[in-house]
Amino acid sequence: MKINLLVSGTLYSSQSAFSALRFCQSAVVNGHTISQVFFYQDGVTQASRLSMPLDDEFNALEEWTQFAEQNAVPLVVCISAGERRGLMSNAQALEYQLGTGSSHSGFKVAGLGVLHQASLDSDRTVTFK
Amino acid sequence: MSDEKILYVISRAAYSNASGQEALDAILIGASFDLDVSVLFIHDGVFQLKQGQQSSDKGLKLFTKTYKALADFGVEKIYIHDLSIASRGLTQSDLICTVTPLDSLAVGELIAQQAKVFTF
Image 1 (cartoon, rainbow over the protein chains, first blue to last red):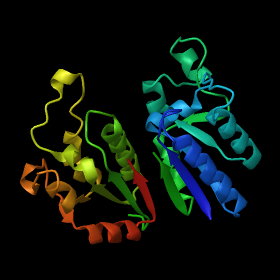
Image 2 (cartoon, one colour):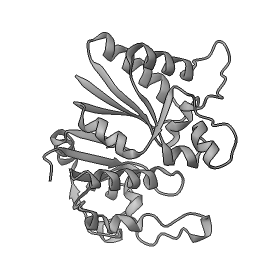
Image 3 (cartoon, rainbow over the protein chains, first blue to last red):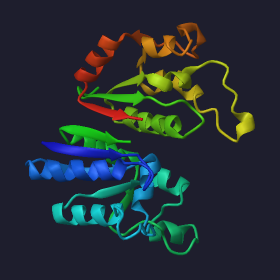
Image 4 (cartoon, one colour):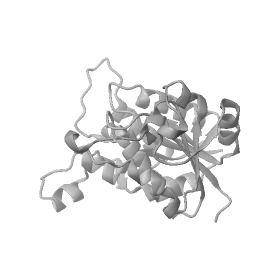
């Protein structure tokens, strides 16, 4: 089964990243495919390249980028939700003359249309708030 | 219209968070995909449709008025969970627009009919 994820919970204080990642890992082990992970609303904070949890804490950024690389899963951050919350790529930061971007290079920045297209191309969409 | 049925579930109240505003953004994009779109207000989400909202002194946009205009974007299937309204001391006449009430069983059926569900 092709599964598309919508992740909208904030980094660190919500369980969104942890639950979504465990779901993704189990899905892959059981022979399913994760077609895309789309970060929307407060979920965009999970794409920050500047997050630095303590050594013995769950590291969402590290786990997302590893999972995406190992399973060729696109990680996509909503452009409008990101800009509202200080999350942008180097290209966007350059455009707004704001120096270096804040999103990790493992995440692409795109619009809500990409969320819907991935949903249409998948068998299921699962939301992690 | 495509056969693909897609449902947006609105479950949080307006103003204390941006959930409703961003759900609306997603609904309008979904409507542009020419899908069979439905919207369901449930739990505190029913407060999004409450009459008499005043947002001007809070530095917020009165975005909820867009719900009334969803039909103009081709979104005509708008539902509300009747128990969620009643348990919050509201009735249909307290709402800014006419929506179709569903009991708990019908909510389950609505969700079961969908190809995709987005929850906000």
